[in-house]
Image 1 (cartoon, rainbow, N blue to C red):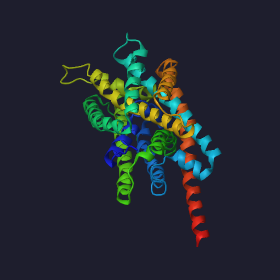
Image 2 (cartoon, one colour):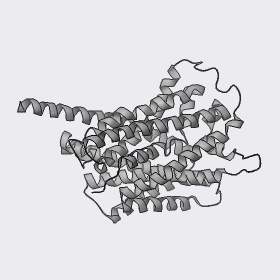
Image 3 (cartoon, rainbow, N blue to C red):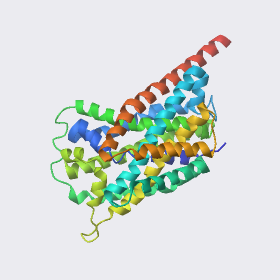
Length: 367
């Protein structure tokens, strides 16, 4: 079975966390918490740390198994199969929406006359290539792409500083702490996506006591790095556009890229930014493609290229039925808040708790 290193695990996890979050996050948290919504980003991402540690705790007892296989052992085959089908449904549908993001942002931003299906097909071919070549190729791709994406995002933020409007951030906490609670609830679904990916990639992680310590370190490093970066992304949009305009813009960070000028002579660099951001969007879509195939292989025992092509067709069908960016944002938000969040929030702690209870009961019987 393929294996990825602890460094690849950290970078891949950070890329999955970042992919898709930096575009709509400012709209969500500002709509819920107003000008103070940026404060909720890092606490919301921090929820992934205890969940990630719970997932990694299964490595010692169940090496080379994902959480779907472990669920069948702990809960029984029937409940395990139900969880597996939910995992496939959520991963497949949301992955198709992530493919739609690639086409919509390119069509609406820099290539207005190009048919949207061209972008869908191009992104899907990249995803299919990586899934066919395995998780190691996917991890190496992330190692190359993610540092470039992170650097370009920081560059975009820095070049946007001259456009900051005075007074947009004040008064701080003018409405109290209650809006921050609602903003945090808007953030939590994104780290839950990472946790669901971690549930599948668990079977490809290295084992060993020292290695597990590095894996745990990789979880909190990825969470804090992406949390801080997304906080800056939200903050710069509020400072430049103001809270009301930030809420109105579906993909405000793309608009911010269009406004960037270098020495007041070079403009249009948003096409460069967008081309680089494509890499992290492909990583997010590919992660959910992998999750879907892992679910199908575990639950239905169906493997091979023909089943990956079938999943590709489903992804493409979901993307093609997406009308525009507004409807895509609403549909993705619904899946995140009402499917991904409750599914991951209940499944992982329940599995961890029941597993520990059974382990303790077995120890008492043996004693």
